Amino acid sequence: MSAHAALLKTFDLDETTGQLEVHSPIDGDLIGSTAMTPVSEVDAIAAKAQAAFKEWRAVPAPVRGEFVRLLGEELRVQKDALGKLVTLECGKILSEGLGEVQEMIDICDFAVGLSRQLYGLTIASERPGHHMREMWQPLGPVGIISAFNFPVAVWAWNAALALVCGNSLVWKPSEKTPLTALACEKIFKKAVERFRQSGHKIPDNMLQMIIGGRDVGEAMTAHKAFPLISATGSTAMGRAVGEVVAKRMGRSLLELGGNNAMVIAPSADLDMAVRAILFGAVGTAGQRCTTTRRLIVHKSIKAELLEKLVKVYGQVRIGNPLEPSTLVGPLIDKAAFEGMEKALEAAKAQGGKILAGGGRATDGVPDGGYYVKPALVEMPGQTDIVKTRNLRPHSVCHGIYRS
Figure 1 (cartoon, rainbow, N blue to C red):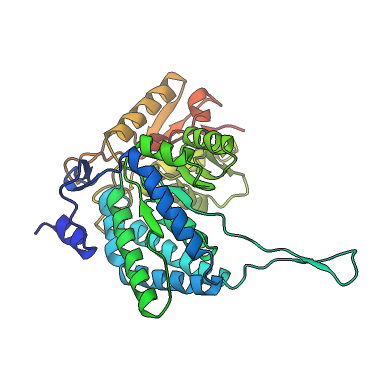
Figure 2 (tube, helix red, strand yellow):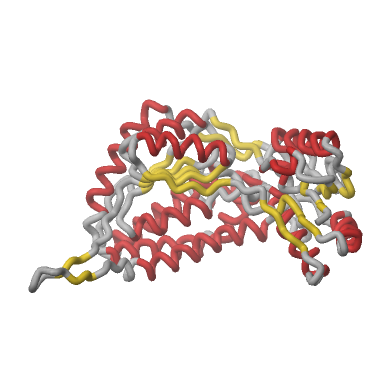
């Protein structure tokens, strides 16, 4: 049995016969394959989610919190295996993969406390012997769309809170990282089993999966059964989701990308700034929505800071993300690498100067993966590429400006 198959076996996953193939960004190897959800099934999934919601909303909130507590316990048991699967499927370094699962555990802990704090106001009335009370009501089935770069934590942030508030869940993970989502579904089912064994009732279909591409995501977004769509991705995707949901008078919760800047003033501790810049710019190979993409530096410290940054950028350890010494793993796929190349070409065409990195890393890295050297680019001003957010390469390509 291969290491990939053994890891999937940990979650009772035998994903070998579906039409959606999943390749590891580490070396391009096939990890597994899984079935895709036809658009024609979205109606049935929505109906099941509504039925589950109608039962779950009647369960007292502290009891719903007890289920989420059990979910957190199951995540603790599977933390190492799930963290490794995150690394295998999306390419972030293992410490980040484990950290992502810890974030899932943490939000479960938070939600358990929240289940006993769903307070409402008591409001005085002008009518004698009367008062008004505020009561929060569950929304209904919550549709969750997550991205490849945080394949499990984003779901947990939404799911733990939605569950204690009395809502059912339908999750469409990124088509690039479906196996981690299916592993979470297995963990969820174990928590359901323990919850029932302890004497509590929980309806079937509290968590359903929609696996596929844009077409099924659009079908879920447009469906009136989902009063809330929580979507993580690009600004363009969020704008499209927000418009569709608003047209049917639904609500959207959008976590989108940012063209994030760090301002370094003359009073800054430059050694601390260098560490912060490096962590912010190259973590997850720069593929975070919170990645540091731009530096705005006072001219009096520009030369000194650049010298320090060029030195540390040249020392970044690039390689297999499963190895503990690695700081930067691979980009998610070929399209991400090509996007980085185009961004750097645009930067040079707009007067930019590449001070460090920027090319493909080939030494000491697995074959088949798209490993790159984090790029440091000095730009003459606020050019178009500086003002354009590009998740794939832009996270490792940022500008230095005079004040």
